[in-house]
Length: 499
Image 1 (cartoon, rainbow, N blue to C red):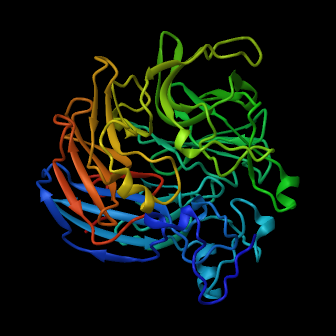
Image 2: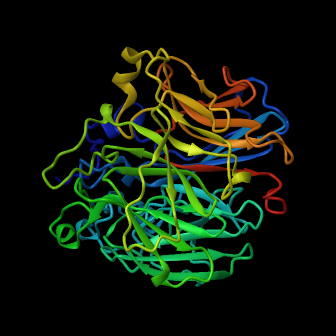
């Protein structure tokens, strides 16, 4: 159902536009935010994150929150002080709608429902990362947009100086911790509904060094992927695309409860498209990747997995969708033999590493692509003492909520929880090492936290040596609705860019 977007209309009375999820729709800057506690001087850099935040009432009143305009936050932390800045990404969609003073964008990833024709249909709202002096805002159905990392001003659509071979670019590129090589891919890489996947790697100076085209067994979502020293791994979510359904005004994605999870494995260097091997695993929802590495000739993939459709707003063909309160994801480890000779081999059952409901994982990025010991993530701890009577009426809708942060030592199996408070939910954390030579996992978690009592946002800094309480809490005078992803950029990485 389309929404009347004439002047004076309000956002639909739906959970994704209610309470804490009511669109914020502001740009601005606040210097020297209030800080309770002490932020250590070793934390010197910027925490960038992005949230979908529609500037206008949506074209369709059931619009998922995933479809909002990309709004980027920057928290510059230095000498114990925090400056905050927020700006929209000036996508083609954003600029044209601002000119029209109304929404022109139709359903999520369905160009056939738009009010006008867009050259590049992007909201740039899923992730932001730093590469080659630019901040890149990503949405996996298009090239990224480049921003100035200091001012957050939009530079423009970024195709790596004309080198980007695919029409799409992942929202989860990986950066080699030593080589600084960017490893990425695009799915539906030749356009909506195409089974083509394009894998590429980019040198630190921006030159494409590997480009491999391959064909997936189904047209399905590949939101995240994994990289090891010698392999790339593509887990496919059983949300499938059908062009005819889209032309009839339907959704881009539809959950298929009968479809296996396909996992593609491709040599990282010197490969051809025919070198890819597609493994199968029983129907599930493979979510975000913790990390992957090689051991004894096998690939060990650590990933969040749910037995239900996490994107419940895109149901199956019969309209079936899980109750979001019943959705849970757990840390599993898949062991993959990349040298298997059987066509479409079934993967052995994954190993459950932690029976706790958690997602939005992070590791110490210095250990990316090799064996890691420490895992951090958002956690739902039903025993923590959340004040549900206060939270639920104003929480709004989106992902299943998380009320804590988790830390798992994979070597000792020690599991720790940080509970920010009875009226607080956590967003995706980032890890900041205590120093360049600190041991793996020795440092600080930084996470944006929703405070439903004050209806404002907070930034919590937690020392991994004492996970029971915050090192510091930074208070924002504003509310930032749920975001998707972000990254920490050390000040030394931005040397010569930042003044």
